[in-house]
Image (cartoon, rainbow over all chains, first blue to last red; front, top):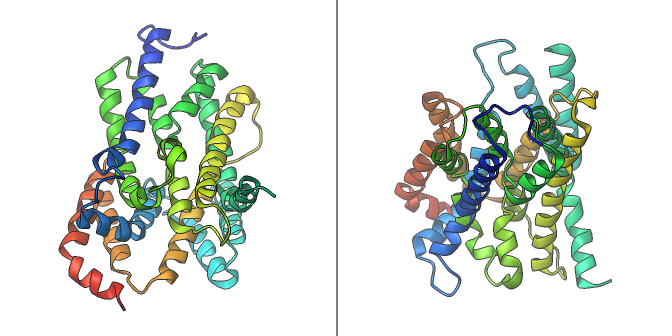
Length: 117
Length: 232
């Protein structure tokens, strides 16, 4: 089944490897719910974080999506800047989620495929 | 119409951007995996049970380093540490979700989180079914994308370069909606500032954990001004 993998990786290895990744991923998702179960009162500080963090997280995710963009080498992040601006302007103008996302993405694709290939 | 069907109908439109993003990101990963010799059984099972986009991509690069369980474990912790934030935010929303709760927690990806934390289902829609269907649909798109990619493999000829920007756009839109929903922009500035500074210092692969620590630090020491603005 696995034929092009180097000799260091057998089928058993692959099963263990991917199981570790799946279980560790699940662990990172479950842990807050284990530490702060429903029947116990959540500490005020954690409640505060729960209210405030959504606003921070989305900002962090936007940067996370753009993390591999280089502003010092060609094309200097220009497609990303224009793509984000298109999304922002469309959204402020029409306030239609699918239009903003579709418009921004299509424009970005044209930029990276044809103008800055 | 039953409660279930109604919730599904309301949930679906919210997931359309994710449908696009997941199908293509999933397919790209499937293609990558098939080039490493993995069949569709592997990619179906991995995407079904791991269900973490970034980590699945990192896993492919880890394969090249040989079998090292401890390293795989530590890398997964690092790449997925941001899930801790999502859990803390969803503690309150997932209260009372009963039988749905284990699955809702399992399926809490960046994208599902971004929809669920920023959306209230309309009046008369069962909140539990709504959150369940958003989670389930996203999960289905991901598994479908990953398996299709493996099957289609290198037959893929459409130039999809740049399509992954759909997820960046999705987060930008949610960012604007959140921005408009509050006068309290301090947490946003903290997040942007911390993330950008840490990205510059630690580089693209290692900045998320330092950024998370910095964000926690600032929202903690600035709790008073943040709370004060909350009440405005």
